[in-house]
Image (cartoon, rainbow, N blue to C red; front, side):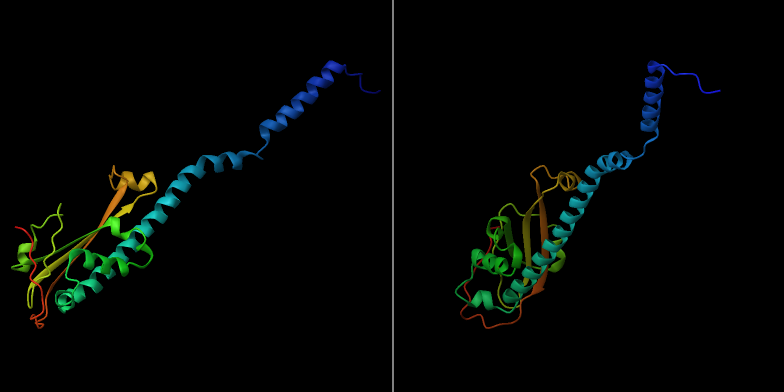
Length: 192
């Protein structure tokens, strides 16, 4: 005895169940869906991490440029040269900022001032108006530089709570000027 004949309608229903049942058990697209769900947060974190690394690298470049340029104040080279001005010193710092030179002039603020003692520096705040007073021989000097780093990822802007889209990178160095010959040094001071 053979199988009874199956109607066309029953065959179509059986075929539909097989195909739909196979579709329900299929795992082929599951990885693509998971990847699509995780891609956006992964990319935000990746670009945020890259931007954070660039911020740290830019901070190190700023630090080295200020230290090297500050050395010229410490030895009296800036005071005794014809370029004893804030803009000339800012140009020296920018020239030492390697890959950040292109936008440096508009993003960098430099504040150089003398202090009576190093303990009196604890109440210094970020200046609205930068000062230029490199001092004379044996003066105590504070050199502060601030660089506005443009933020790219919204993650970093929210972490740093910056509504203007910029991180303010800052570096300060303090030193006593060497006792150089000040006969050709121009006298400069900050307004009180």
